[in-house]
Image (cartoon, protein in one colour):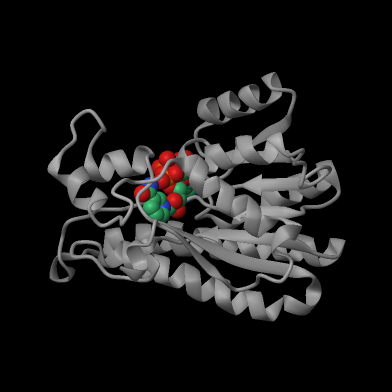
Length: 256
Ligand SMILES: NC(=O)c1ccc[n+]([C@@H]2O[C@H](COP(=O)([O-])OP(=O)(O)OC[C@H]3O[C@@H](n4cnc5c(N)ncnc54)[C@H](O)[C@@H]3O)[C@@H](O)[C@H]2O)c1
């Protein structure tokens, strides 16, 4: 399939995990991929791998929690390529986990809000301005299983991911007549650096890993490529009438 031939696709947080897997998948289907992140070396490695496979990619460093950096990134994309067709707003942090609500701090609150909510808000703001000028586009935001359920010790993360769905739903209605579709994906557990930070490595097979794995009706967590496949669907014309959805990619955890 070449669903993204001649499309300009921005992926935030593409230096690892789900974003990196999506970068390879979009490139494989013909897109020019703008790889965003804060780690230059990792970003350049992703770009090199795409180019080695005959694809097109560029790295642009930006911290998505800072509106000025997001604005500069989107305007750089538009000045280089003339437009932005697809945006996958995926950058996120897990923050400090484990503390109950009565132990939350102003610093952890700020970090979660700035990256997980602000990152999506500022990204959508500037992407939408570009897409309105060029006549349309598609946006996918990464929420989480914790956009739909709570979990002890994860109040700030869960609140921030509920907010990602609120932003997605609101914007999806606001721009529905502008030829811009906006959806979210809500992964369950995914084998990424974030999951390892939260639950340990596969080798350790720790209690934390078993605890999270057991929530999944399929008895396993997902690979980043399985999340990327859902993102490409939502971003493609295959999903031409899908707007404002929060697609659970969790093997059924959220409905079990
Ligand atoms: N791994 C899971 O189990 C899981 C489950 C549900 C949702 N998610 C969500 O998936 C998304 C991707 O996470 P992942 O699992 O691939 O982990 P990851 O840590 O490998 O990827 C997150 C990426 O975002 C980047 N990033 C963080 N803050 C940034 C900022 N301010 N500006 C730019 N880039 C920034 C990181 O450097 C990293 O490359 C996140 O939004 C996360 O909340 C992950």
